[in-house]
Length: 177
Image 1 (cartoon, one colour):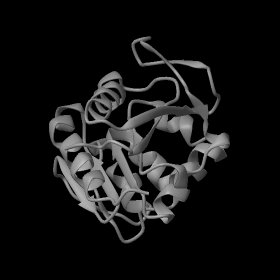
Image 2 (cartoon, helix red, strand yellow):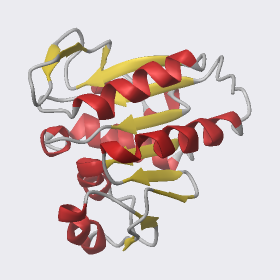
Image 3 (tube, helix red, strand yellow):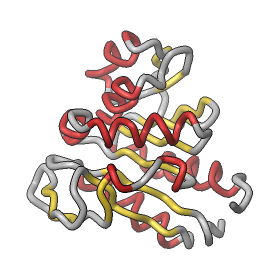
């Protein structure tokens, strides 16, 4: 599917899970979307769990969730660091409230909980944080991908081949702005 004209934010902080960041970045770019790496600081290099670097394009404080058609949140330990920055949490909440696609995989459910967007929603995540999602008001579902409206969640790197098609299908249905 052609995603030309779509704008995607992929969030990052240190300790991100490599596959959960790079697979979406490359796959969404391959589909024609403009992908920006968004972190707490613009132009800073963040390291993955194994030290693989990624440099941010823009700081979360300098954009709005409404600037994007989708926000993708990779897992690893980075979501625990991301949620310490009000601008990162605000970006997710703003995108969600504006009806934009918000996609989270693995431990990224922590960001959804901190953004307060899970109440009454069905979602999945890495099994060790399912209680965090439930305590934030979500109904935990143990499936590779769960879509509930504009929220798309997935459990782990092995689910990426199902996670990305769900994101792309959702984005393809979004009218051009």
